[in-house]
Image 1 (cartoon, rainbow, N blue to C red):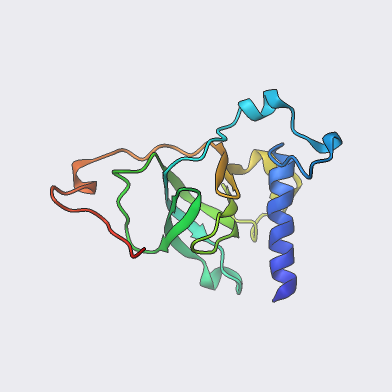
Image 2 (tube, helix red, strand yellow; image 1 turned 180 degrees about the vertical axis):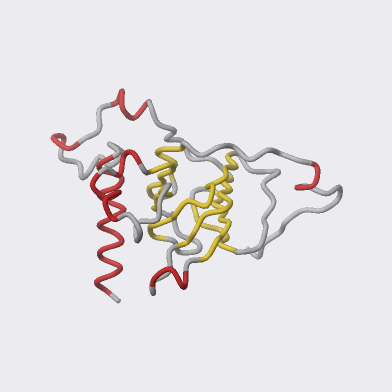
Length: 167
């Protein structure tokens, strides 16, 4: 199990690095140029909702689950199969049933990517991750977003109703 976690972290690192989104350590030789950083969304936002992402299971495709996630103030707040409101989200996107890989721990800043193909069926995507990463977040900060925005509808936010979570 430890080997899978290390492999998953390595895959996320490679994905971010291949897409030019990982600056590395404070070694200036690996730093991402400021112009390249400016090309990506790198500001913390209050609420991010990502819907319709396949969370890759540890035992093959049998455990893959279609989930919705919410990040609040740079920390993972909810991962659920249930629908969640995106009416108050600063960023609300549709993962279009893409495949989410990375580190997700409730209450911690998440680091993950959303891939447009299943890496189990097409392992070659790791050879050219830049072409397959649709969304990337590192330590709670959005560094790449090519997913379509979710439309805000009146059905998403019924009058007098709000989604509340325990502190």
